[in-house]
Length: 202
Image (tube, rainbow, N blue to C red; front, side, top):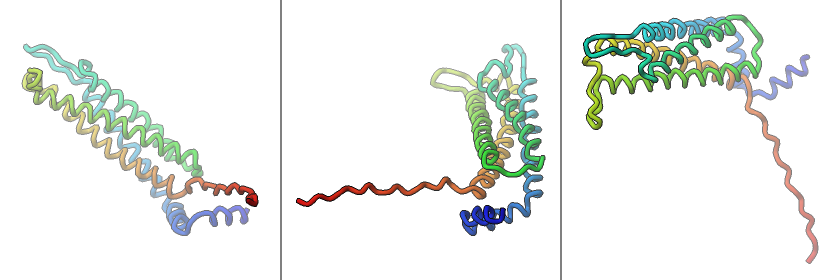
């Protein structure tokens, strides 16, 4: 047991050993902070989702709702997916478990994927909102927010909340990256042996 531990420690650099010891010492604090950061996007994503779901307006110019635009439907779905993932990951992180490489890689990859999903939803919705507020003179598309101001205000609030959730996911991605790359080494490449060619006398 001691030989195995010594061999593992010898394969790691002094900096990694120091960071590993510090990480183990602050394991409870880091786990609590990470759990909170994973719970926070739930409230944000659900708020943005509900605000968009209930967003519709009808007046003498017609009616408009979030389902009329694909970007806003994508925003609702992305917030729902991220809220569900945040809940499951928070429960998984809150329970103390031994750290393993598959677990670290799983959190790293899922955090990256969810970050890009929510970021893409916010970016696309922002572009549509910009067009709705300013129109497009090249195709004679007038501003829609002048007629549906209440609808645009709620869209703006939903997008703003979504970008706050994006910040949370960026921080979570950094944490999962640190936990992965500070504790586990990159795969060791074996040196290739040269092929000896027999020399024949001329």
